[in-house]
Length: 340
Image (cartoon, rainbow, N blue to C red; front, side, top):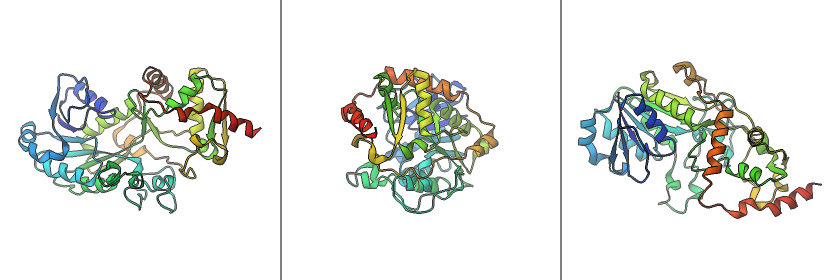
């Protein structure tokens, strides 16, 4: 199968491209050349900016992809340009989306005040009613956060079911080797620093959020790309079972051998650097059974093994810059003393 990937050199795109290349597919990756990835020889690199897709028509026609995988459709115009560039060339487009399209995500960030989705959240559940969830955080219209929203992009990708069928994959909070967000770094660092306790917001401690290990997520993407049954379908991707945030912290503690105490307290009792403005009243727990039922998918890497590999990588690859204010142990000690 000939597969064309837009933005396949990043944290999630790179392992997905690797799997497709290693499986014997003819893969071309379109990227700006800013990220180095070691692909198999079967993977071709095409340098370019997705904002100029229209300039590469001859190259696209020559490669003649059967499937286009768009790893980074952040804006509506991204989706429009892909559909225009590959209409009449490709047979299907697979677009990477996110669980942030759901109404419960808007409530989490206090962007809207409506009834939350019933959990687990299925693919047909209501989406956010307020678009551009990160616009309040943007520094201006030129900031990528200003117009970011995958809901309009999804609509475009699913708008031509006959001429260019679309597949939408809504990904979870993805952790693991290479995670540029270092999602578990603060937990691991506190334990490695031999802190006697770990403070958590009480509501956050009970909150559940669907996550996925990078290797499992890459497997799911590769499966969706190569299986034509996914045409004109939307899928949630992520772990089938969802544990609380406190249980995640305890799982890491068990692996690293940390014997401290996890303490959940009201948000107002936390030091300033641990306070959160998010609303944890409703879980962001999605239903992934459609993908499993349609394609027979199951994770190859179990959670324990995934966390072992993640912890090892985080220890060997800490963030380039660590904000010392995020590890104000004196303030945490004072907050702990105030509880007693």
